Image (cartoon, protein in one colour):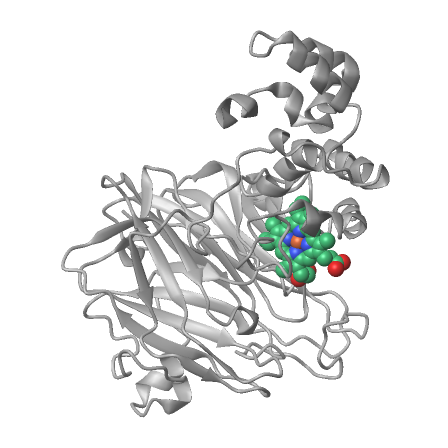
Length: 457
Ligand code: HEC
């Protein structure tokens, strides 16, 4: 019954109708007379449709665009699941959607198309405004779409395997917290292909970002570090270890930051975890006034069949910059050439509090040294919203493609997040230092790993 009701186009509300450029009521009488509904139902819904209601018009928008975060146990500050919850915030919701503050999305419109762009259409924004203005009516619960079910607190379907940091990390109420690592053995006796992966922090409000690395057997990275207990680089006694803690060419399983969504790859592509690998959690915690602890988990869904392509996370990094005090728009760039063919899937820019804009380009070299750039993505950077931008159509990059990442930093007083406009700012771990990393995911032949991808074939 519910499915049947979902298929009635009249229920999609003003959003759809305006998009087709047909006056709402005219279109409504057309669709309401469709073969799937009886005449009496058609008359009833024609009358109801003159008013935008919560159950029929608003709830579907919330389910599709908001509840990923705004649900019980989600990352948003409040749930938007019931009529009462939503009605109480109707005016605020109108503000947040009209200003495009919500849903959060920072890519400049018109450059590239991204499959995870959650933006509302103008018609949806107008529908929310009309609903609020007319008194935020409930309508009939019979018009509601099926309730969206979320597995536990995972956004991906129930994971096949959950790996948890074996020991909780104690987090102080105040002060800087050095990057904290925890090495988690997978115990895999054979290589596994991962189709979807999600990081679930316990102390969400304290996790500024997390990077989960795949450390295959034999890797020298953090070779003398303890397994299964938290540590920082400063705690490592072997001379080579502390300096190398931040640098590795091991593959990244995923990067998490508040607002980021889990990774899921098409059926032909997956991340690979070799037999006997460890996962290395690199946690960047921030203190927020309350002592607490964190025991982050990662959830994995395995590929049902071996994929034909392997997903690798690569990065364009520049760690040699000095941002002058007060500079409002300081530019830093990094370039790299792909030795082999790859399919570009997604981007994940990373900077700290002075981040302002970030761009990815393909560099084209023409006749007589002429250089031009194909702009792939430009984001208005926001420290609290680090997210990946997944190309709606993956892009084939022939061997020899040169990529460029460009970052702009605002070290002026005008930047409300700037911890110190007087400082000359260099690369470093802490948020008052800066970073310039353009992560990007590519798919390559299934037999390649990160090392041999960088050997020209
Ligand atoms: C990716 C997660 C995410 C999605 C999707 C999302 N929100 Fe939010 N929302 C947040 C978070 C986190 C905050 C807290 C404020 C902040 O960090 O910007 C917030 C804040 C808000 C606020 C409070 C703003 C204020 O001024 O106090 C409203 C209202 C809101 N969201 C509505 C929505 C609506 C409506 C949608 C869907 C159309 C939506 N959000 C989608 C995460 C999300």
